[in-house]
Image 1 (cartoon, helix red, strand yellow):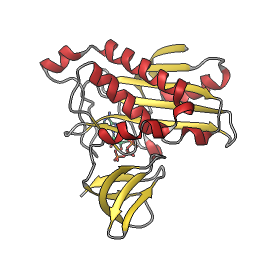
Image 2 (cartoon, rainbow, N blue to C red; image 1 turned 30 degrees about the vertical axis):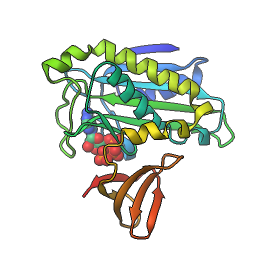
Image 3 (tube, rainbow, N blue to C red; image 1 turned 45 degrees about the horizontal axis):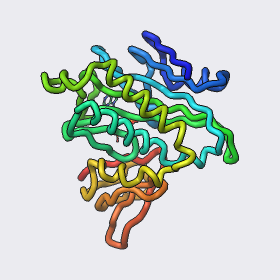
Length: 241
Ligand code: ATP
C-alpha cells in the first residue's frame, strides 16, 4: 500500500482517485487539512483546525461496481469497531454514511466509484473524523471524539489513525468476498435511529415512518401504514421527527 501524507489538499478523495488510477498498488492519502472537503451532493466537509482524521483509500477492485453495494455502511461499522477497540464509547451510525453520538455528527464517509458493471472498478473511500471539535458547521449538530480527560486517555491521534487505516484496508481487501450481508447485523446493532420516527429528505415523495434498519443491500427500511419499504439513493437523507 502506498501511503501519502500531505499538509493541505483540495480533497483527499480527488488525490486518491488520481493516484489509484495510475498506481499498481492501493493508495491511502491522508491530510491535515482539506480546502474543499465534500460530503454527498457536493455538500461541504469542514476540517477541524486542531486536527482530525482526513483520509481517502483508493483501491482497485477486481469486480464490477455492483459488488461494492453497501460498502459505505460497512466502512462505518469497521471505523466504529476500531474506535471502540481504543475505548471510545457512545458511537452509533446514521444511515447512510454518518458516525454519530447523541450530540451530533463525529464522522462522515464519502464513497466515489469509477468502473463498469462487469468490472474492474476503482473505489475511493473518504473518511473524515472529528478527533477535536470542528468550527463553523452551522447546519447540523456536530461532536468530536476527544473533549474530556477520559477521552484523551483513550487514544492519541496517531493511534486513532493507525486503527482506522488497518480496519478499512482489511475491509477493502475482503469486501467483494463478503458483500454487505456479512456486515448487516453489525450495522443494525450500531444503528442510532433504530425504531425512531423519521422522514426521508431528497426523495421525490414524502416518506415518513419508523426506521427498521437496513436490507441485505444496505437500503434503509421504513415501516409505514402499508408495511415496510426499502429506500436507497445518493440523494436521500434521514431526519428524526
Ligand atoms: P445529513 O448529515 O444532513 O443527513 P449527509 O449525510 O448527506 O446529510 P454529508 O453530505 O455526508 O451529509 O456531509 C455534509 C454535511 O455534514 C454538511 O452539510 C454539514 O452539515 C456536515 N458537516 C460538515 N463538516 C462536518 C464536520 N467536520 N463534522 C460534522 N459534520 C460536518
